[in-house]
Amino acid sequence: MVVALAVALTAGAIAIGDSGEPSGATHVVTAADAPLERLANADIADVIAALQAHLRAEPKDAAGWSTLGAAYVEQARTNGDPTRYPQAEEAFDRSMTIQRNDNDAALAGRAALAAARHDFPTALRNADRALAINPYSERALAIRIDALVELGRYDDAFGAAKHADALKPGIPIFTRYAYVLELRGDPAGARRVLEQALGSAVSPGDIAYVTTALGQLAWTQGQYATAMQRFNAALKSSPSYIPALDGRGRTYAAQGDLDDAAKDLAEVVRRYPLPSQLAALGEVYEAKGDRKRALQQYRVVTTWIELARANGVATDLDTALVAADHGDREEALNAARAEWQRRHSVHTADALAWALHVNGHDKEALGYAKAAAAPGYRNALFMYHRGMIERALGDRTAARTSLSAALKLNPGFSPTSSRTAKAALAALDGAK
Image 1 (cartoon, rainbow, N blue to C red):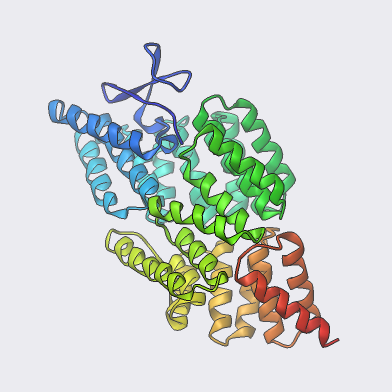
Image 2 (image 1 turned 90 degrees about the horizontal axis):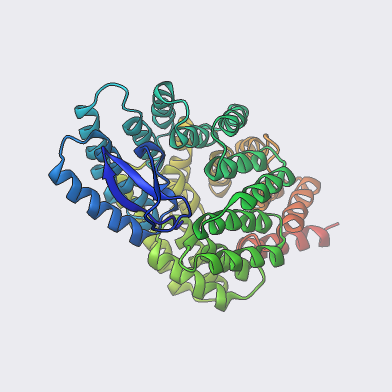
């Protein structure tokens, strides 16, 4: 997201114009709270270059090193390039070496790095350590919510979101609050929070960020016209905003416009080659009948996973999700089991359920499929997985209910799996 940064580094702080645009009138925020996640990649590259130059001149600037580390984490996120993570770790270590006590900026940065590497217990510990020093650290408050969500601690995440909203209300907290509500089965509440957040958004980047979140929520509910309107509005506000382009591509696919879907998603993976996006493009190609190009995308996922693992990222969930449908099924199951040992989120439960199913362990799979819906979360892909598991177990009534619910909620949830769901449901109806 684009929030222009004037990199006027004074004692490691960042000066940011109130309007979100470069200006002479700036206010200073601490490195831990710098809204780096709202920057476009080009801006991050400029920030990193300026920080590096500053630190060559002022190598003892602890806050400067923590800000550089945070910028590396964000650059990795915006590029899909995990090779920046070791550099981020080194920068945070330098900051902590220079300032061992009361360094909430470095601790919040370490929390963000751990979250990016999918080490959520460490992310939570470092966020808590940062908040013990600075209870108002927006970055630490936000990462704490993220970590609790990813660990499957949804009641705790809800409490953390309410606490953060009372302490440091703002768009990063609002959007996380909305996601927790969605996970707890309250999409209407999530929409209200996001609409309130949009009303407070001023900069083009913030508008694009929140508008895209509203589009993603609409997409999950099968409201494609609304989703398309939101994604186009986000791209109008910030034309280079990748999540909005990704959302628009998936919406084209859901509506059956596979050519426009492939065009948007190909541009997404060119700039942001992460597993979910690569797999989405692969499925569009597969739905178009272009198996060769689909396989190319799935192979790139494997390459990214290997690169990420080499740079300290826990990749088992990514492996399980992609390999179950597009790779080695036994590898998918091993990865899903390993991830479940680390965290019990709805996404991990669904991934393990599906990996068990494709390996023929449907009785065990059903328990995990039910766990994926336990907080009240309604996800069409999860419902499809559960329906196919129930079908394999011979429970036609339950399978019909789950598959119908998936297609009613979001009929185009996947360009390939939604077709399979429709065929399976037709077969079940024909067998009445």
